[in-house]
Amino acid sequence: MPWRNTINPYFIWLSEIILQQTRVAQGTSYYLKFIEHFPTIQDLANADEQLVLKLWQGLGYYSRARNLHFTAQYIVNDLDGKFPDTYNELLKLKGVGDYTASAIASICFNEPTAVVDGNVYRVLSRYYGINTPINSTIGIKEFKKLAQQLIDHNNPADHNQAIMEFGATMCKPQNPDCIKCPFNDSCVALELKKINELPVKEKKLKIRKRYFNYIVVYTDQGETILHQRIEKGIWRNLYEFPLIETDDVIDEKGVVENNFFQEIIEDKKIVLKLFNPKTIVHKLSHQHIYTQFWIVRTETIVGSSIDWENLNDYPVPKLIANFIKEFDKKTV
Image (cartoon, rainbow, N blue to C red):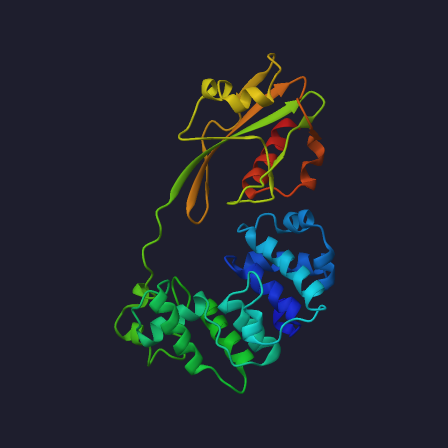
């Protein structure tokens, strides 16, 4: 992995933020893309947020990208470009929690602060047979304390990276390689046949269902409408087609009679068609988005518009990006 060959705090910070909620296989290409566009923290700080969000497109959890940009500007403008070099100072940065602060402090500045990520939780809970839920307040404190007791004070960087790598490659979530594991003679979970039961997690929050109806305006001249999401919540500052959110799936009549639809579509000679007969379910961590894309063919657009061929210049949620690709295939 490219970030394993550096102790530059900017690169380590960048990789850790990208790898939050993201698999290494997916995150690596984004990391390489970011350091190509922004080789220094000054380059990232001076970038336009729209470009940062565009490069982040497809990774999800976009608050990470906004915090990344904000923090880069803070370090450059308020700290004279000098990265904080202690765990406690790193924790003060926006978007940096215990895990990221520990990783940067240990890898870049040799501070013996234990990293506790999903891999570490899994290794420790299985090896010691700990049943405390890893996503509970008690569990977070318990595992952090244990990891801190175990850390190699002389070489914290290698220690932290080693235990994370061990969890990712050997003590995997599914089908761990217990036969080849060097700790198989002392692993409590293996002895008690509890490998598949550990680590323990508390039940997830109830999933919220939302129903999105995107109004995809398309003129004969190839113009369309995009709106920026400025309210707090998912996809803030990203762009999307005009949206009608409803309490349930609606039909064509429900779209046409909607007040928002009538505000943006004044032309009475339109052709309205549902692009996806089967509702698309876009799953986020705590909500599922049930989506319909309604194509509106019209001669004129009220207000500002953009050329369809320029859509790729705008940062959009993955849900929208996937639709644009499919639409382009069918209209070519």
